[in-house]
Length: 372
Image 1 (tube, one colour):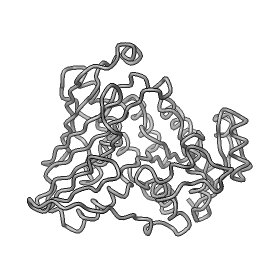
Image 2 (cartoon, one colour; image 1 turned 45 degrees about the horizontal axis):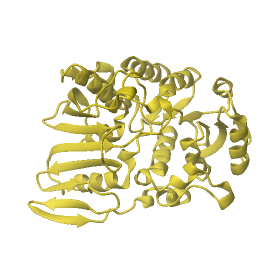
Image 3 (cartoon, one colour; image 1 turned 90 degrees about the horizontal axis):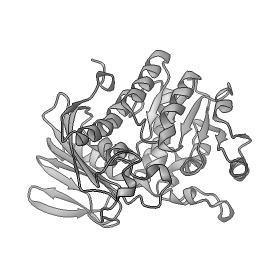
């Protein structure tokens, strides 16, 4: 990429609209185009944010030679197909999680990035959250000592969400808990074993053939003495919403708060201490620093549900945008790149297969591992 601003197109304007002002105010980007199937909604958002290029057909958008990169924020069943189409159209891709819903789709995306030289980044929020950045700094400074074990969970009640979520296997949407346990030690999963537990409502089971209320997976990290455990639930399980990770070190350990908005805990030896997690906006260009703690709408009349959630996901959204754009400008791989994204995503896909087979060990395919 040259050093000129990167022309960005955002696909999907529910959650995706939240990123429009971040790209508009990032010095490396030109918020060039948006795409939404509903023409009235697309034109309204385009008018609200002064975006002239408004598409209702994704295939037509990909024909635009001025678009450098697409940021995909559509329903999960569309991610792989749309990422593959974009790469074939010679566009760089940022895509919300998960990368895909099958191992084969992940393989196709990895192979396309490597044959074209294009960039793919899965926009995994937790590995750019303020909590993760806090623990990462502790680890890099040596304060945790040797990491001994990692644990993460993502528990959420999806009743009432759009129909494609109904009965979804818990581990098919596991990147928010798999991501941090692999990212902190900069490791990749070698194999997994997962058990399902409990049972969801009978009417939810037929769509995906998945009966489990909770799936819990052990992950063996490749070329490491470390293991990790992740837990995921989507239906019929009483729990406040929680995306969390815990890290156990030889000197210090970090445990995520049990109740949202309360303080997390650092254990030094056997001594616990509550800790305030700082913000990391200072790592970002000045124009987008505000988006770690504030909504991303610009005035009352332009408010949209997705615009008002900018302080969610641990303040990660501007960090994700900055990593993607920086990787393109610096001609380097982002984190997570295509292979890393596939490794994170395939952990969940294979974990569910393991649960359906009573905990059978499943090895991650070679294409998800870093080349040696």
